[in-house]
Image 1 (cartoon, rainbow, N blue to C red):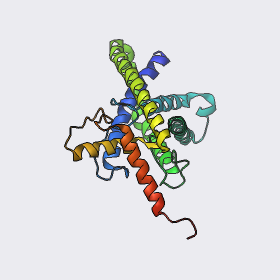
Image 2 (cartoon, one colour):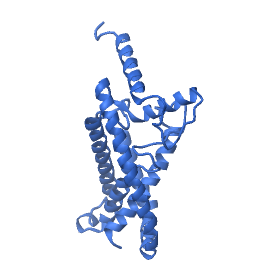
Image 3 (cartoon, rainbow, N blue to C red):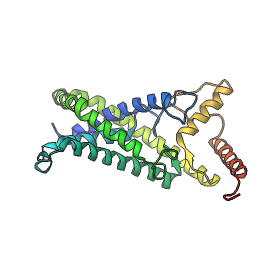
Image 4 (cartoon, helix red, strand yellow):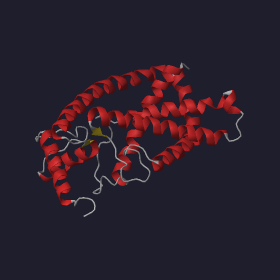
Length: 249
């Protein structure tokens, strides 16, 4: 099967599966969501998280590389593969988070309270989780991926649905980038960093308090301007700074 077509298919599968993983994680395990509300995760509006799509492609390529001569002869080949997967996923996570933070002043996730974190974007805990996910992928998912790709190569008509996915995805991506650009300008005006998931939760709670309909797939839709939410965030931040005594006192 053509490698490019295989990677396109894997990006589709990984993005959707990653959205499901993040949806469940943020509902039941995330400390940023203490009331355990359902929140549409990720950067985009639709049911996909591109980071996982890229991640699945990377894990697939790394797993396939085990047949290369310089890897096949290693004594602890599988352990090396899992470490490489963890490093690769951590690097993707860091680069994506840093770009959003520095360019758009938007923080998509926050590990600031986790030991050993770097800029709140990556941390040893989640690098270990990536290694464990890499091992789970290698033993339980990769063989099924190979079989699925063989099926896909024999049923290329399914590529029509993959094409539809990418059409919707690109429209969604353009919409999301436009939203982030608006948030960037508002964040700069208010001199704050926007925490993406917190802002979604803030809008959802505000609409629930006023008994207004909330759209799961349009989490930023609100009759209140986004600037008002960010001003409220800035004022709360300033109040907290005033309450905190200077160091040494």
